[in-house]
Length: 360
Image 1 (cartoon, helix red, strand yellow):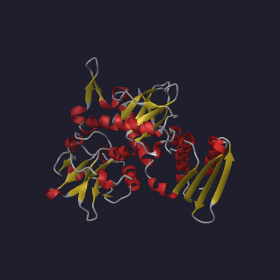
Image 2 (cartoon, helix red, strand yellow):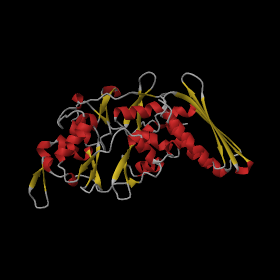
Image 3 (cartoon, rainbow, N blue to C red):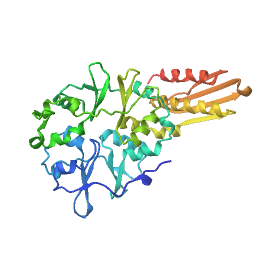
Image 4 (cartoon, rainbow, N blue to C red):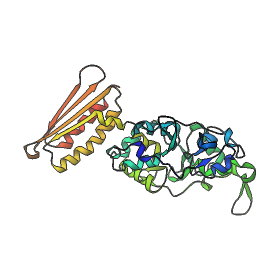
């Protein structure tokens, strides 16, 4: 089991002082979720500088001193469960957070990427992307490639997001626009307000088209692929999201680092979900493993279920399968679901449908 104390980063931390200028600090960061840590004399921790809070939530100018822009993120305690660490990343929208011991001494930092890298083979990510998209609350936010930067900035501000999927008027994927790609122009409007086009004329930054700033190289997956594949792309390619497209290359969703962290929020539920099997062949153990990922996912969606047991028995040399599921509510007697049949996947499938219908 991964422990926070084993993955805390103690060196190569971006440290700044209260007298630094915001523009100088932001130039050291790589994304809207990145962070620089502010320290006073004697290595006293004061807070953070983060692009999301400085530029999206607020609008500090580039010549502002760090002391006026400090953000106070959640403090991660060294003995905090991984699920709570993941939730802190999501709630704060920052992917680098400070870690402290029981005496409030600064120990180092933890990054969302480093945390996720510990779970590349975890069963929590062996679920189809389609299942994740089905339960996401927010819709896909897009802009046209010929929209103005002013329009895109307005969407960034209104929807409080850091990335926009760029489409053409045929609704096919054209690229992705990150708020951080615009940072240099936003924090220094007087010196970067204009940018020449191919003919050499100067066009106001806010009137330029989204296509001039969006990245056209976008990593994509289909909704039938596993969440684990999205996780590996995010980690290996050092990106923050993967766009999900249909066969016609129309974007239908996006998997972000937030979604990946969400899979870890309730990792402590593994303790309350018991799985037992008897006489299963290697092939059927693999089938059960795949089913467990879906079973686990939907149990997490049931706040009134405090514990679940799954028992699978193979009989008659694979000619009969018996499945028993026990769901323990906060109050009252457990609900027991029993199924049997000759085909294990067919026996297991109705169980998910029953769980999904349980009243929350």
